[in-house]
Image (cartoon, rainbow, N blue to C red; front, side):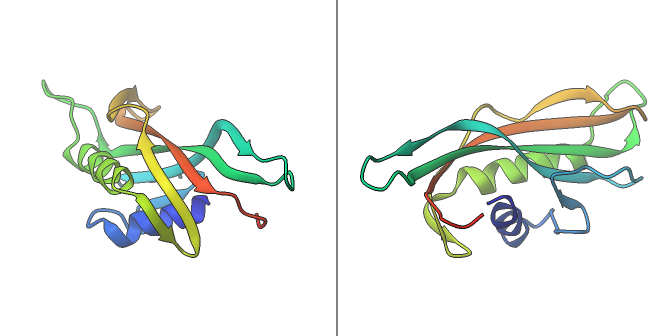
Length: 141
């Protein structure tokens, strides 16, 4: 699931490139601006009593972005990190009744608007946004 959404982000964003500045489940230490899509705890799957398999999976993903340089000056804002988080927000928020790499996604919905989570250890600004995902049940991992 996380790989499918990461690929979808990369294909539909002008700012994010998988393996270049977009990473899966990790935000590597680097000097450049970066984004990560991270699998987090979601909600319980919707089950049926017929075969016991989940009919609708409801995972959650988080997008994290980090600026290029340490914060300095009167306006501590990174247009790169801010642009990346808003781009990811709009791309994922647009997923509805869509097949992505063979999996059926009913909806990807933001839990909140993108927001600043402060600075990392190197004083670079970071932003985050969380998304609830509704995906048809799958027998593969």
